[in-house]
Structures are given as structure tokens and as C-alpha cells.
Image 1 (tube, each protein chain N blue to C red):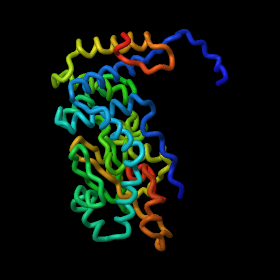
Image 2: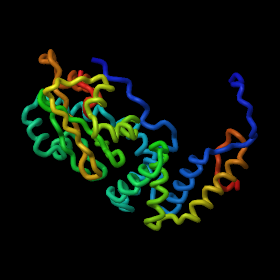
Image 3: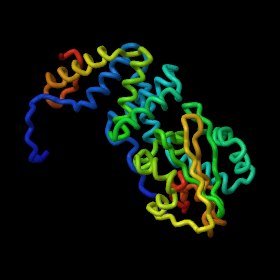
Image 4: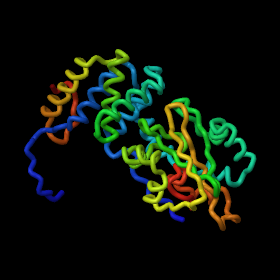
Length: 99
Length: 202
């Protein structure tokens, strides 16, 4: 009669962030849940990547499709964070202004 | 802290490619005013600590002890579940499917992994896995056997495919020898998987 130990809700912090962004954007009316399910479903069908990576890829696609963030804007921001991280001494918070 | 034997090649920090992608999205969405960072933290905390299968277990225990509630659940699960305090963020329609000696219900989402978040929290890893998603529909009995459930030959299996609009909650059968138990005690014996239909309650 013992319930099984429940696994952690999120395995890594980024999973939680990606999850929360989708829920909040939906609540704010950025897209309908059907639109999200369509994009996520297509993403899942396209490869064998882990579920949370599908989730992230689908989020990148839907914000682009809805005109919230363009691809170039997103990629240059990824690059900016990468440079900021590498310019930050270990153990200190990473901030974009460092790049 | 003792040295872990890992050679640190970098004096400076490094973020994984995935963490970089998430940070890029989040910082842009925050700057543009589409999301509020504090609201993201509250949401994550809620899912980590407040929303989970215990919510569903309370619904099941109430259905076991209160026939009027069970009836309501059969007719309009969305409203009945909302009356206990759990409502969907996606405006999804809830359907409660009741296990009986004749019919065993199990839930899958073949397309992605639609799941009744308000009552069960976030889905377990196996629910999102391609083998479960594909095999639950084709050969539910063998999937159930892998979960350690052998059904009587005469029990029919109904597999419910969730969608973005309709989410299913399985109401497992009340175990024998639980007559004297309170609603609270009953809720404690309802496990998550029994509400997906891959395990018995108790």
C-alpha cells in the first residue's frame, strides 16, 4: 500500500524555465494551447531527442512563428550569453553586460 | 570540498548549449514584456511543491466515499474537479473514466503528451516516452504487464488518447478491505500511476 516515490518534477533548472515560459506565454494570449500542441507534436515526430529538448525547440519555433522573437535576434542573444559566460570568472553570476 | 578528480579546463564559466538557448529566450521575452520573471519563479515553485498527484488522489478518494460526487464526476468532471479547487490553466476539458471489473481504462497521448496537469502535476518520464505512446494503443495488455498488472481475461481495456482539449483522469477501483477508511486515509493509498491506469490503487 505504499505509493511509489515520485520522481523530481524537473531534472534540470532549464527544463523548469522552458516549461514556465510556455505556460505564461499561453496565459498571456501569445498562442492557443492547440497551436502549441501542434508545434510540439510535430517536433516530437521529427526526431528521437529527449522530450524536454522537443519542448524547447517547439518554444523557439512558436515565438518565431508568432513574431515575438526573430531567429536572428534569438541566435545573436545565444551568442551574447555564451560570450558573457566565458568572460565571467567561475562562481560569479553570469550577466549579459560582461560581454 | 575535496577535489573530484575532474580537470577544470576553464577558469571561467560555461553554459551548456541548451542553457544558453533557454537564457536567450527568457531574457528576450522578459525585455519585450511578454513574461514576468517573478511570475515564472512562482509558477515553477507551484508545480514543484503544490500541484501534483495528491490533488488527483483527493478527487479519487472523494469519488469513492461520496456517490453524489462520483455521479457529478461522471457527468461533468471539469466542474466536479473544479469544485475541489483544481482547474486547468489551458482551459482543457476533463473527463473521468471509471474502472470496473469489466473495463480497465488507461490514458495515453499518442501525439505529444497532453496530461491532466491540475490533478496529476507534470507527467512522468515513461508517459512521455515513444514506446509507451506507441505501444499503449497497439498492445495495452503487454504494456500493463510490464507495469506488473495482469488483468482478468474478461476485463476489457479501454485506451483513451488525450488531446490538447480533453484530458482523462482514471478513477481506479477502490481496493478491498478499505471500508473503514476515511477519505483522507483513502487519498493516501491512491498512487499516481493508478490514475493514469497503469497500476492498481492501494
